Every structure is written in structure tokens, then in C-alpha cells.
Length: 210
Image (tube, rainbow, N blue to C red):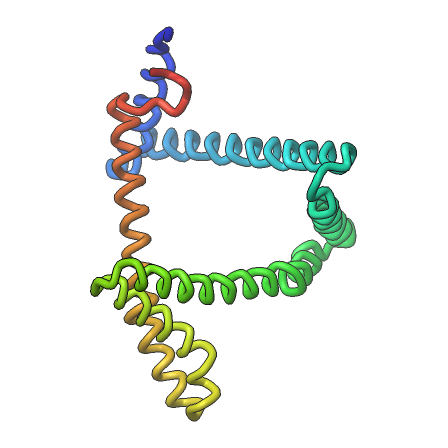
């Protein structure tokens, strides 16, 4: 396949400028870094807009052809257009933040809570199935952590007084859930660092080169 040295040079140069601007406090360099980051944010926003348009077109075609699962596509489009109308109407009357907060509190928060509850039950079920197939100490730790976290959120506040329940729940959350979350964040950070270095060195070329 045809190589693209110009794209490679531009990608490496932009990456080095942004990286140097984060560590070297020189005014022209920091200004250039801020400009490049602003361009990246604008490009990402345009990409999100194009992605939403493509999502709308795909589900609209699915509804028009009466394919299987088109009812869910109709629900998605109605929700999307309703949220857009709510935001535009709130912007028109000068209360966009308040109207969008209503949508978040009435729709997004309940849906996220339901998904998190389903995720907790799914994790316990998956850990039990894993324990039947591979009964090692890591599986047991995973099962105990999931059960304790679920109990701290749903069972302990009912059985114990409020202050004691809050103390136990905070301890379990900070030690188990907090430790796992920090491990995931560290893993994501190391993965992003490794990916960035591979792009800077030209080993990976997500912009289309080889």
C-alpha cells in the first residue's frame, strides 16, 4: 500500500508540539499547543455531529423498511428529537440549562441507575458461573467484592442504623470499589500513554498510513 510520509510527519510534529507545550513554559509554544488542542476539540465535535446524523439516517431507514427491531429505532429517534426540541426551546426562552437538567433528572439518571443495578446483578451471576468453572482465589475475591458492594448499597442501609450503615458503606466503597476504579484508571492511563508513544514513533498510524 502507498505510504503517506506527509501525514506521518504532520502527526508526529503535532504530537511533539503538544507534548513539549505541556512541559516547557514558553509562551509561543504554549499558545501553539492551545491552538492545536482547540482545533482537535472542534474536529471532534464535528465528528460527533456527523456520527449523530449517521445514526439518525440508519435508524430512519430501518423504520422505513419495517425491519426487525424498528420499534426500538422509532423510540430512539423520538427520544433524540424530543431532547433536541427541549434543548432548543430552553435556549429560545433563555433557560436551556434548566430544561436540559429536567431531561437529565427525569430520563438519563433513572436509565443509568437501572443499568447500574442490572450490571451489579450481572456481575454476581457471572462470578458465580466463573466460580463453577474455575475455583481459584481470584474468582473468590471477585465474587466476595461484588457481593459486599451490592450488600453495602442495598441491604446494609436497611438492617443497620444510618450512621453505622454509612460508615460501613463508605469503607467498602473506598477500599473495594475505589481500589478497583483506581486500577482501571491506571490501566487506561498506561494504555493511552503506550498508544500515544506508538503514534509519535510512527509505529501506529490511525490516520490511514502503514
